[in-house]
Figure (tube, rainbow, N blue to C red):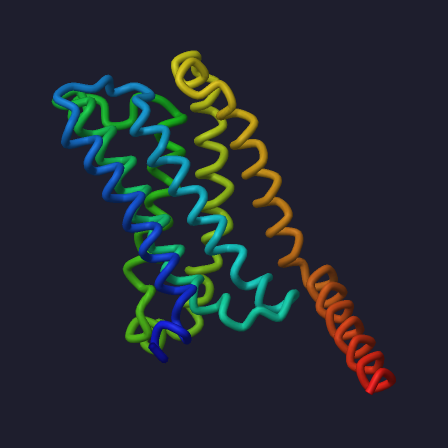
Length: 219
């Protein structure tokens, strides 16, 4: 019970992500044939990759700006799930294209953006353990800061794909949803600016001090 009380947020995140992944894989297994272009499973896997990536990026601001210390522990699992869904998205594309994928692995520049984003996330996922931090030294932080570059590329890839009529036919609100994700990503990037981050942090400390003083007066 103590472990559950201490790690409930970590457990909820991983259990939810696992259920979404199982659901996606179950759909893929249940379908005999599916279109390689903008199949519902491709759209779903891509969106979940973005959602978990944004969730991972939001953990540091939640810790530094809002003071939620438990957020730091969720950053890595959220990022790894983003990578897992991105791999699933890529795998569904390869399976759908079949032999054509070997002839033209990058059919257009939009697909190339997706591969570039995945290529950035791959070494980050591979070096997400504590054992990788020490030998890499300062290069570890430099590599993992590339997650913001990956975020911009991946969201850009998704927005370009959403302009396709087949995607809009399957999910009419996909462009609106992805535009919201882009706005969230830009907000998270803005919070990374030192002046913005320090201003928000100081504001949190001032509010905490004011609340403490008010509590003392009441007592």
